[in-house]
Image (cartoon, rainbow, N blue to C red; front, side, top):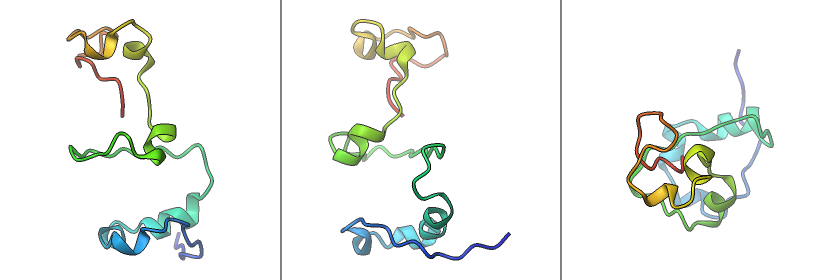
Length: 88
């Protein structure tokens, strides 16, 4: 199934992110714009966790977060094999 990019994102910094073209994100936005069913995983050690877009849209592992000090106690509170894996 072919799709065309007919959606223009409202990100004022879009032009400063040339890598997005290589990832075909505009085509993905055209197909999934506005859907809360879409999950995007970013593996990057350079994320700005204080960025407003990430503050309200990042995934929170409630198995770690729900436990007092779970995100910084050095334990695998939810038993999934990862220590202090609170955000994704």
